[in-house]
Image 1 (cartoon, helix red, strand yellow):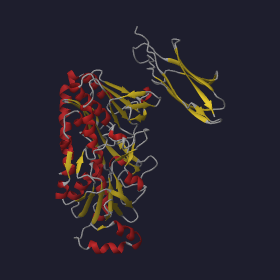
Image 2: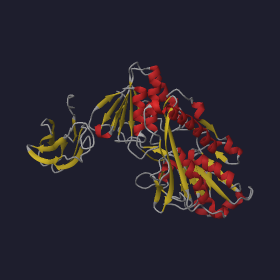
Image 3: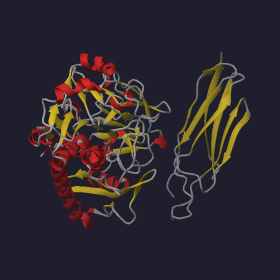
Length: 106
Length: 430
């Protein structure tokens, strides 16, 4: 079996915001999302995406066979406090890929 | 044709049309005046078609360039297969057919007064106006990409005086050994959907001979493109790993350029250094129709699907890349095909010859991927009550398969492409 692909998580959000502002968060991860439903390639799927802010889950999504390759999410969060976002993608095989970014307020 | 100065144009707006009669007496009586703005695939085709089929209509064509450089086959200059002179066309043929060709820029359309002002001060009045102005580039839609930046990272996405395509060719010739050529490709809709990918192919064709260790990084805002399978097969067969295409969902969308440091910066902040950069920016209809209030908030012009009359103004027909006509592509062929319907519809009232009830529009886009290697997509479209539709069981795309099996088809399509170019430019300029 070949070495599994190690994807690069990408996020884009402002590094600072005013108190109460709605900020746009965009995420992208390069992944083939092979379901193996209609091909003989071995299954290779991400299982879950989760974003947390200061340890609290902001959004979570379980991938299913209908998920496209290179999944991307855009969502909005109201900035009420400074803190750290952590974005984590977990593979069905248990590996996980994370990236972090802090947001200042003011 | 009545020609007035810019000063008189202003005065006439308040003076009423009666004043126009006097200079008109100097000309022979005709059934009407057709003014055409833009001498490209739409406008030149319209002028020629009108002169042939409506010889008693006065035709005036306004086009700034004295020689028209086609975008189709421009990529073959990059591949070293054509020279600028091969894709430049004179307006003498249209003059010989009795069209008046004015080399000036139309600056303002007065839809109410049926007049067009030119940069040189002349004012033309019309009974019917056909506008085929092409695209405008959305400067700064990609941060840092303005007209000055296009002298460093050429767009080469309009013919103009030919300087953009020859600049890009010169940069490719000067590419350091093993250097990187970057392309930034926009989201839909844009002029010539397969164009960027033919361009990638022709750049690779040149580099394979001149600089075989060079790389092409093609950053795309989209996740798929016209004739994708055919192009990607060709890239693999002809150019190995020279070409890397980065789709939008792999962070291919370029949002900023830094011409000083020769950088493309992606949506997620990745910096890519390139030696030669070709930025094809997002587009909208050319300014003349946007300034006239003919475009909607998309920046393109809504038109009637049987007449191409603009939704926002009577007696102005907008054809070519500037209008909204999906699923028809923004192609030279569609501009040529729809020009004839627009002329027929525009001149129906004044000539008493009926417009077509069920017009048919054609498109074929050939793309060259290498020597003796081309393929095509063809379609037949019809007007519907709220737009345009593909005609079922018509058109199609060239077959996919290994070159060993399809060499003859690819070679024949390269010849068909050359024949298409010769015949469509004859249908515009001869």
